[in-house]
Length: 195
Image 1 (cartoon, helix red, strand yellow):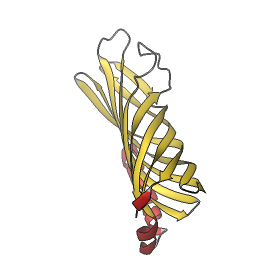
Image 2 (tube, one colour):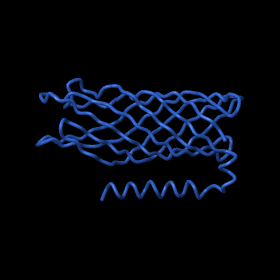
Image 3 (cartoon, one colour):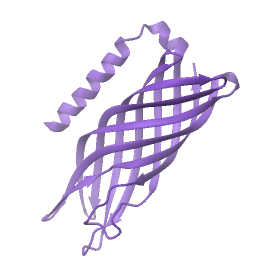
């Protein structure tokens, strides 16, 4: 029931996003972006040998639309993974996490450079694995982000982005049940195009 509610929420937010813009706006002010980077967990877990999950890869992509030169909205889909060794257990707890977020960004244009900051809300789907068990969970997430892009020729742009995610999940393996926080920093490169 909880998973269904959050998926319905995401669909509703997405519908509002699309309804706010006439079709001509999309053709003139849209962009797509690819974001490869790294996930740096920040939450201290008492049930892990090293206290924190391991740093690992993060990949993301987004499609966005400019309201005007100072405001943009985007739908972002991303993936990250991490693992940590459970105390007195032996096997690793591995987490594969998929996100879908709706972000709003405030933008300061400065010539060919755009500096931005903002935040978003979304759905976080995590798959916890402790060999041979696995458990799928869907939860709510909040993130803040900031970065800058440099506009190249032919509507291409490159840049860097940092964001912080707050979200949680849980896992159960036998009699072991633990809450998991995914709070952490993401540092990504940016490659995109406007159309």
